[in-house]
Image 1 (tube, each protein chain N blue to C red):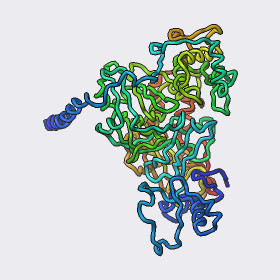
Image 2 (image 1 turned 60 degrees about the horizontal axis):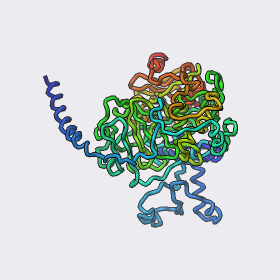
Image 3 (image 1 turned 180 degrees about the vertical axis):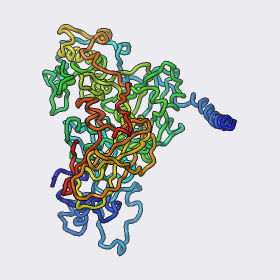
Image 4 (image 1 turned 120 degrees about the horizontal axis):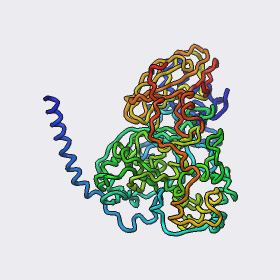
Length: 187
Length: 442
């Protein structure tokens, strides 16, 4: 009985301020205006969020040469001195002693390529590419990675259809490894 | 003797008797001192013009003349510092940076061996930036919360500071901490092996408080957090984590966040890998699935030896390290030493720490010098009589969930050596007969 009483008292003490808080909460912050989120977006797998626009491998080749090659290399081979990553190659290397992780060999989703180039590239002028340009550059990189043909064009629908070579190469991360829990008695 | 630059920037040659290495005196009197550097500033103050010109105050300090007897000369008047204090000119510890192609996407290490107590001074908190450090006017900064919510809202900094707040101590560890050690001994000292770890007192609003204001959709399961830096950094965060203890913080160690720590606003996810604590936070997009951003797929995923990789290994596993004695230090002679270090776990509180002085053959419990708190470092210590013979010093820890820090062999058996992230194996420091301390793997 004592425990029940104590619980009841605690519950009353706790609930009163919480309910007051919840009522006030509706007035916190202010509504988001129509232009507030302009230029802010994220493009998740599935393609539903991808913007309008399109670009071809051929357009991407020219754009890549102008905007990307000075860091990532003419052959997308990467330039260590600039920090520009190697973008293609490395397929079949992930289980070896020297895995080569590139868009071609490692990235599980093509939408991620669009998202990242759009938000953070080129490194020396981030966020300056139009949606059309990002589709074109993505198409070129995927073409050089042997994932899209030379005459390919990308738009929202086509990008969502791209199957990346390493799409099935990942474990979910929420599995717990019991070997962590051998405890103190194993000395 | 080794000549690599030590954590303080001084070389070992300058100083045979580094911090805490006088077995005949209490260690406290020597912590944080670099005798060689201190003597340098002293010399500059007593006259030689060239030396004076060459002498520069350490970062965060102002150089003053040092009187021969401070009791015979009036000291400085107050507020000469303009109202914001500086550290002593004799305190020289600084962050050091990784040698990367650019300094705008790189990292700096906290000088762990010089830390006094459990909190990291804000100016020594480790850094990891992917697009440099932005300068953000807080009066123009908003946090947008939208997506699967009934009422999309924006919060100004003033809005956020008016909400109920919490203040909690938590560590942040980069999941790349200690990554140089996967394939063999690489880093020389504990600043480079373990310095992507820092602990602060954080102040801000719980995500669960904001959630009330926007009225989450019951199907909401993930939240994209986005920063306002040139990398426009994004990570997907599980909703249960955000609702459990996720914080939107604007305060660090009693003052506003430092710019390099996300001023004016960052995400704080106790115990999660550092990259998820999005700095310069501007947007939270609520969804029913993860966004699979570049940072959580092509980076911050753990490659196993079978060629497959694990996604979203977000909680940092139990880990500890001895900071004294540690790599590049030298014990001047046999005698009593107080072994000290840090232990931490992303899964809750540290439960216990053990010390071995024989490379893991035998173990004994260390003393916990601070009260274990959830997802916070603890300081530990262990009295040790060094008899002058070779020794290998190790620490290992457990947390309250029963998870333990693995040996290097067990960790590699489980994860291979190409994981890059989440290296938390037991660290070994060898002491040779001359007292030199080096990084080894056993």
